[in-house]
Image (cartoon, rainbow, N blue to C red; front, side):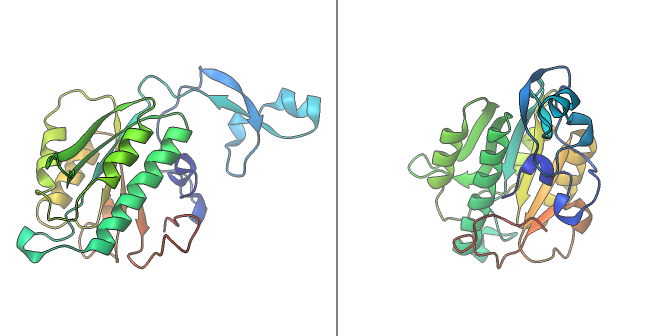
Length: 227
């Protein structure tokens, strides 16, 4: 997956950012070599004058720069409709890639899913905190291929929390049932981005920031392409 902090600004389609995760420009922690896509306002002009090479100011994420990934492992509206192992695996890959990218960018990352963890037989829930990536990857690796509880319960629980400093990144293969309405409600009340994994959604297309095609072969490709 490309640098997600940049992907949130849709660099792959050369559009200006609609929303972005929050950083505190007051917390300058250093200077690094310029990377394509870095904002002009972050360029360190003194370093350019001194070295003749573009450098970018590196800012520490603010205390509120925490991201909670909400992963929907329920690929069909009803449990009796069964499972789709390949799509469920791709969902985990997308969530893992997002978590790794955000963690590398310095964000405190957490993950909550309706997917059930092996042996524990309970949904995965990791609060955002620095250094959680290993725990998140381990949790994703232990999710079982079994029809999970409705994703609506996860969304309702998050909406019920009056104060949560984390921003949200929803990863879902469907907006069926009440999922679309609850994601829209979450977006209206909190900073929320959505990655849709699958074919073009019949409903809820307006909620989608990026889409990972169902046909994407993550084993054969070095990076996830956000459409």
